[in-house]
Every structure is written in C-alpha cells, then in structure tokens.
View 1 (cartoon, rainbow, N blue to C red):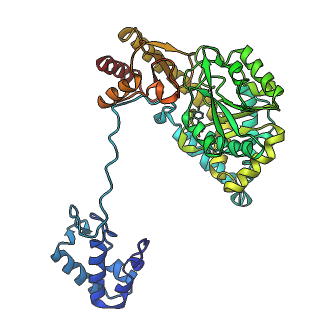
View 2 (cartoon, helix red, strand yellow; view 1 turned 45 degrees about the horizontal axis):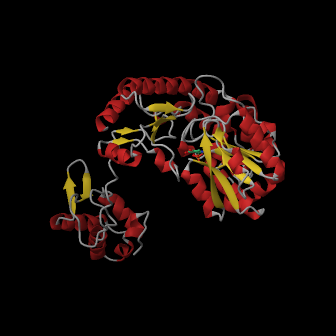
View 3 (cartoon, rainbow, N blue to C red; view 1 turned 30 degrees about the horizontal axis):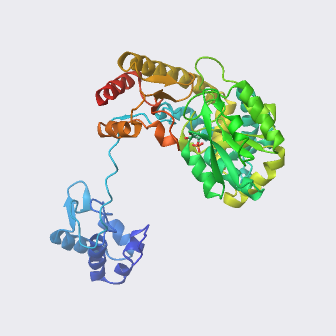
Length: 456
Ligand SMILES: Cc1ncc(COP(=O)(O)O)c(C=O)c1O
C-alpha cells in the first residue's frame, strides 16, 4: 500500500482485484489518514473507471461506508470522508501555526502587499514567450545572460557599481552569495572572517558553518571600526557600508578609504552587502564602494528588500580573481538559478518596472518612516531614533538601564513583534529596539506606538 499516492488506482490498488476489496481498501485509507476528513471522493462512475470495476461495486462500497460513518453523502456535494472524526491510526493533526502578531515590526521585510503582481505576471508571461527552447535547458551557472546585462546596467546606473555583464553572478538571494563566498574563502586559505557588531546573525552563522571563525568588529556612528579590524587575524570582512544593519549608520568616507587600504595591505577582501541602499529618503545614497577598488571588493545585492524575499534573487560582482571559483562553486551546488524567474526579472528591469516600483515604494516607506518617527516623538520622546533616513527599519535607543529583551517579551505578549537590539549583538552596548516600518500603514504604525507606550 503506497504511503504517497496521486491516483485513486494507486491508493486503492488491491481494490481493483475484487468486489469486496473496494470497500475494504477505502475504509483502510480513511482509518489510517491517507484520505483526510473532508476529502471529496470521486463520483462512483469516475472511481469505477479509475479502478476498472463495475460502477455498482463502487456505489455499494460507498453505501456500506456511509452506513458505517466513514463517509458522508450530501445532496449536491457528492460523497466526502466524514469530517470531525479522528480514526485510530490516522496521523496526529498538525499543530496550529503560532498566532500572528497584531503589529509585526520585524525588520528587513518590504511591503509585500505592494508587490507589483500585475507587472510581474506580465513580465513572466512575455519573458517566457521570448525564451527559446534552448533557454529551457540547464542554465548558465553564472546566471541568465540577459539578466546579467540588465543588472550590470542597473547597478552601474543606480549604485555606481563597476561591472560588465560577464562579471555579474546571479544567486538564490544574497544568502546564497554569502554561502558561496564563505566556501570560496575557506578554499583559498581564509580561516576567519570579520563581521559587523551588531549585525545580522544569519550571515555569520552561515559563514561559521563553512568552518570560518567569526570576529565581531564594533560599529560606531561612522560605521565599522577599521582600526579594530586591523588588529585581527582576518583578511576578509562583511560590511553593510551604505546602511549598516541594524544600526542604520553610513560608513564614513574616511573609513571607506581606510577599509580599502586595509584590504590592499593584507591582500584581503571586502564583501559589500548592499542589501537596501536604494531606499534612501533624504538624499541619494553614496555610490557603492566596489567601484573604488573592484579587485578588492565583492559587491552583493538582492531583490528581497525591493520586491520580495520569496523570489530568492540576489547577485554578486566578485573581483575577477575570484569570479571563476564562485561560479564553479555555484555549478557544483545546484547547476544554476532557475531561468524563468531570472528572465521575468530581466524583463521587469528592462521595461523600467523595477525603477517604477522603487519610486512608488520609496514614497510609501518614507511616509511610513515619518509617521513612525513623528508618533514616537509625540508619545515616547525619551526613545532616541538613530541612523540615517533610509531602509526599511529604524533602531531606537532606549533609556539607559532598560532591559530590551524583557521589553521585547512584554511586547510579544501584547501581540507586538519588535525585536530587541540585543538580538543582533554579541556584546550589547546600549538597549534598543529594531523597528521595521515598511509593512505597516501610517495609521497602524501610530497604533503600534500607542501599544509600545502602554507596554512601558
Ligand atoms: C543585512 C542583510 N543582507 C542581506 C539580506 C538579504 O538576504 P536575501 O537576499 O537572501 O533575502 C538581508 C535580509 O534579511 C539582510 O538583513
């Protein structure tokens, strides 16, 4: 008896061998849970045809099992497996998903309700129509050619990245880029990497899983402390220069220069995670650091903060000396990212849909950020927002002595998700909350701030 089945013939295999067997096998399938409560069964004519038995065999089996209570017949909706009954042997019902927060301020998520569904569907449809049969074969592990051309153009135009199409590598989100780089670094002799402190723990965990020791380097109002970095054994550093995650500060131009000098002096590498640089509200963001020394900087980007994390689309521009090793690693991992998504994304870029979406969401997020900060100023003036006007989140510094983890828990009990800064820090320097505002309307944000007030 198969545990997985796709046709009733597979499910009730022995039933096609004898008349009483239909009833027996159906009962068994209901009792052991392969036919779940509420499942609508095929019509007797259809099932008889599937099993190769007479229709009467099925109608009498259905009648018997209706009589026994396993099945229910309702006029107009056919025969279903009786709902609301757990048969012995059936798999235990899955646990209910944890209740959603009433106000979810977790950082790093764009307004998913603003995803340009129509434009994406159109891009998908037209891109698919233009793909050749050959395009449907195994992809180039470095990425779909037309997307790499569009990305090289977009990154040059919007982020001042110096990249030719052949230098762009498409990945499954920035996450895969980090993982590829972790292994390439390890394979080329690196045993430790520096990360910002505080920072996104996921990236450090991923790097550590590839055998690299993690060296946290403090961040101050001018960004990463390059002077501290130079005292470590590291020759590679991951940095969010345009908008430090989570603190929201920008790497000062003098620090950028110092970082590149450090990389040249130790034959090192800077990974520039440009995860949300397009979202700057007060002035254009500084161009990417990568262009200042493409031989020392890996540029890394992602569609997760602009469109949606579900796309799993990211990109790397590694220095020429690393490019082949990165692509070979990607080939050995998965033979390349799916072409259909890449082609749709290329289309969205080439038609200006990505730029239009960015213009729309920049306005949206700016209004949301303003509403949050205004409301905080009115209601919780002792909380101090830090960082530049950018991105999808803001860190608020809490009064000295506040236990931010305890506050986070208290807020969660009130249905509000607002992560403590301590969640991102190995050695917390001040208490804070990391408040993502992109997904909530201004009214909802104002309500959330009133809840924050009530919780403190
Ligand atoms: C600092 C940072 N970099 C990159 C990413 C993007 O990751 P991905 O493209 O895999 O979704 C995130 C998402 O949370 C992030 O916070």
